[in-house]
Figure: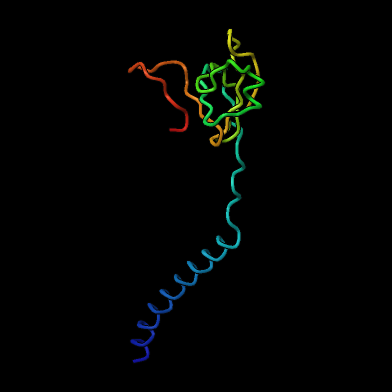
Length: 126
């Protein structure tokens, strides 16, 4: 009779020990979460020719690039960036001056000027 009760209790002890180990491991993980990765700098390995499309009229950028420059389609070179923000250098033309500025999702977007197989430009981050 004692041997039978011991065998039944042994399985209960093993199950409870396993659940305790899982609980302790879960608590330790939750108390020490992995460090969040910092926003890595996305630097273009080689400068990439892009077309910049500014979303809203930007007087400061318009003065910098020239009032005749069409902000809806500025030829530029992406030289780096952080996250979704790209640092670009505009390519001087007869209407646009050379300038270095940052394109953020709030003020515009960029499209890679090199056409893909279908002949259309591709947009980073899409």
